[in-house]
Image (cartoon, rainbow, N blue to C red; front, side):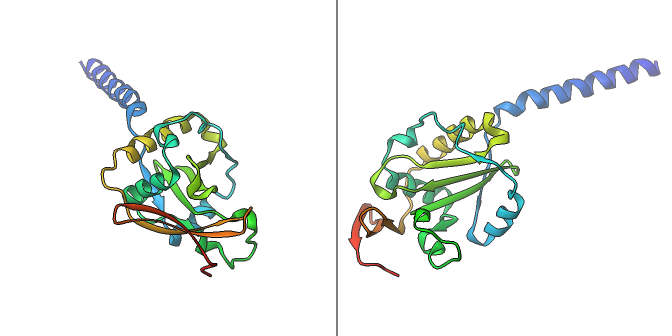
Length: 190
């Protein structure tokens, strides 16, 4: 009788674990945005990551809309970016190639690093993605889920960024406010 009880327990335990494993692939990835204050901790934690854009190449809906709209959707979904251009100006090692409009850094499911950068400013579509080469196989699903989250946003988030177009040596104020997008050429704001 004791053997039967142990076998029933084992079968129940194995079935429960198999069910949990089978449910896992269908769980949507969880996005934890990294704030500017958490940047150093993120950099230390993922210092040995071999960053790659592989796994992010398939287009999603968010790759088809203007970058300024993606920025407003990111603002609504996740708040302020991890980094904007003014966070980089004047830092040691800053180079002209580092001119960006914004960067959002994430930790997915408390273990996978993700960076999203806008390097072309408000005049293009899509973003640049970076993730760990060790997890390239899950990056397409992460990008699809991010696109689903952003496209589900109903009220765009207001933002105000600066962008420097290095090829033309031109500064821009880029913003969404009062239901309008603006990309205004300005004098150097710094």
